[in-house]
Length: 216
Image (cartoon, rainbow, N blue to C red; front, side, top):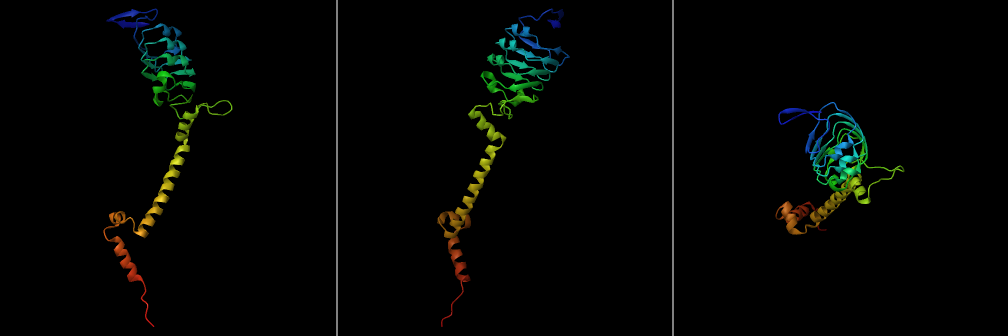
């Protein structure tokens, strides 16, 4: 690999373990991610995005204990996200989008802080934070009970309950409002909405509308 270091072109036969930043994005690199990258113990930023990398994500990347940013987006990586990556406790930025990754997304340590944009474009991924549930072979949800409840709200069960609740409240409100108007009580509430003297005016109109009886 040819690099320009301090203004001089140098040919590197291997990656120096003193590197803290590696950006090899937007090239035409192919093949799998070298497991030897896991030997770069003080690496903080690794960007291999927008290449043609294939194969699984190297589990050895979990050895990069100082890593703060990992971008493997827009490649052709497949397989599951290695659970070894959850050991990266300093990881603040993760982008695995636009690959062919599958399986359930890890949720421990830093992985519980990443949002949808870290994984979009991987049709085989499932689990939080995506709305796609993970299924076992028998079709049962693999999510814990609490997480499954959250998905039910997202996927449509919850909104039905909300609509039913609002509908019931609306009907009850109409009924109570009708009773208040008919009875004229509480007086302050009726006068607040319909004006002072509403009850008196209503009775007066009723008296006018009542038929008069002639004496025999």
